[in-house]
Image (cartoon, rainbow, N blue to C red; front, side, top):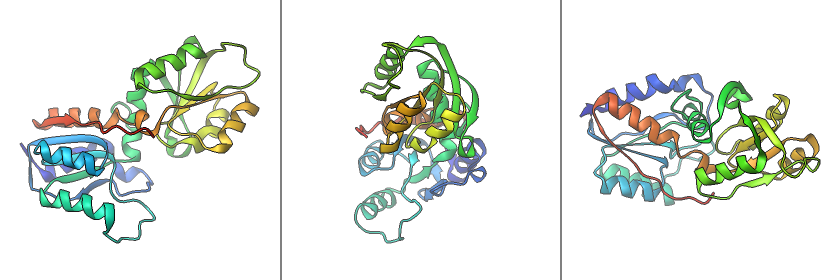
Amino acid sequence: MTSRSELTQAFDALLCPSAFKDYAPNGLQVEGRPEVQTLVSGVTASLALIERAVALKADALVVHHGLFWRGHDGRVTGWLKERLALLLAHQINLYAYHLPLDAHETLGNNAQLAQRLGLTPDGRFGEQSLGWLGSVPHTPVSQFVHKIEQVMGRSVTQVLPPEWPGDQIVHRIAWCTGGAQSYFESAIAAGAEVFLTGEISEPQAHYARECGVAYLACGHHATERYGAPALGDYVASKLGLSHIFVDIDNPA
């Protein structure tokens, strides 16, 4: 068991949220009970995840996507009211770390995804250096895509340059988890042969075809479901807490 203040200090010291310009408040978003014994982690603070945390008798919940985002008008109604009401009724502390959890060099979403895909990181690119660069052994692109689909358990939306041969050999990979489609041009400029992220928007298909760099959209949730459990495991082990990761399925 530990205190809420000790848990907050542990998270903040590890993830350094003040170093990021973010779209959401990072850290403790909803205050619950002062003592913490059971920590639950998940990707998004959805009602389904909060209900599971209640069932697991969690004292704290740590997620990548919290409740509050830039542009919200501040009214507590509808889905926000339902989620907040459940957290407050059961005195569950809610922690959310967005960009800091993407960026962490070992526990973050990008680092954890690299481990699972056999990527060797060796550089950063893009705004706030959130994009990662690395390499794989010279591999046919079909084999690389197949590995992604096996790891993530879902199909990949792929746009390959039309001039590539039937099974282009790739080596230089850029990646940024989640909704990082705006990083594609920076990845191209950084010398990537393949860019991997969660989502794709209309312009990126044209960039891929015209610039000779493959684009792989692997799912927002799918690419970001590794950082939260790694963070939860690490902090729980340091503070003597029980930790449970709950993965609420999301096709996006």
